[in-house]
Image (cartoon, rainbow over all chains, first blue to last red; front, side, top):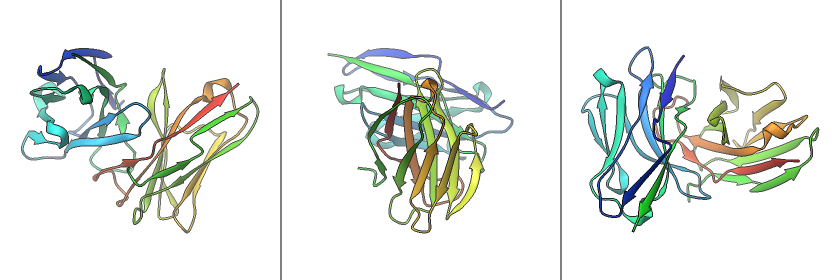
Length: 114
Length: 114
């Protein structure tokens, strides 16, 4: 079955430190991959997406993600986090733009320490 | 503000009852998606409509139904409610039929079943 796994339920990072959130997918072929962020009481906002081509994709708010086919991973990174980055982060996938919605991981809750 | 409007924001009801959640997509968006977010199941895709027609079905229970009206707003009907239906229900919209572009999420409707 198609699935998206985010191994870390919570991650705590000091403000100004670098961040990496992990995401692994299990699909027959390379899916379309997405990272969304959900701030408290808010809906989800798209950070970035990968369909094909350059495996390092840039997103909003200084985030980037790297697609690694050999590891079936699509990890999200940021070189220096800000307190406002504290939120829930969701990795999601879709099988090539088909009509099957998005499959989301369970999310990683990011805590920023001052 | 994503441009997607969901009402009501909060709803408390009793088991066995029926509720209707409403979603107005962004202006110009033809696709509407419904997702359920709960602590144990995470974000689950329920159903998608495109320009008034059902396009994709996910993990939607038979007690649940949805429709998209000619003005493109959508309603999710939940009947014979059970305690386990308590969740945050998100609506999202996009221009396209397939999930290749960005989904714009509303702030959700929080349903509590007592």
